[in-house]
Image 1 (cartoon, rainbow, N blue to C red):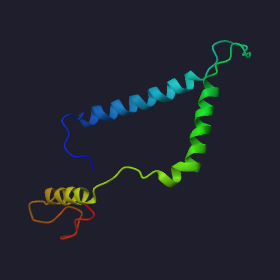
Image 2 (image 1 turned 120 degrees about the vertical axis):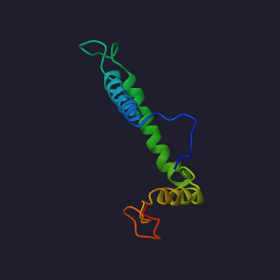
Image 3 (image 1 turned 180 degrees about the vertical axis):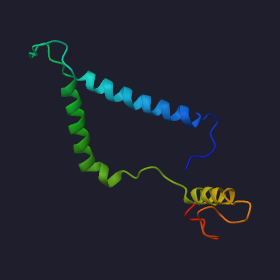
Image 4 (image 1 turned 90 degrees about the horizontal axis):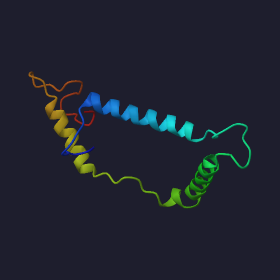
Length: 110
């Protein structure tokens, strides 16, 4: 769906960077919610969990009140997507003139 970009990470490094980022977010989110000391009292409690819960509650409420009706999502130019799939299908034509894994003339599955 994305067109040509000036900078693209190589495949293996891109996967590694994505997985490392996801792991970092998961670990920091869990550690972010731990109390600073035990036993936990009202004066030494980590109130980040309260702030996190408030954001989740407000976001959920806002979604049901307004978001479901007004959120349109990303706009996709179907002509560009179909042109890209046709280009990919043409590039997949093997030396015998057949398309790999697609019947001749059917480029919608490519």
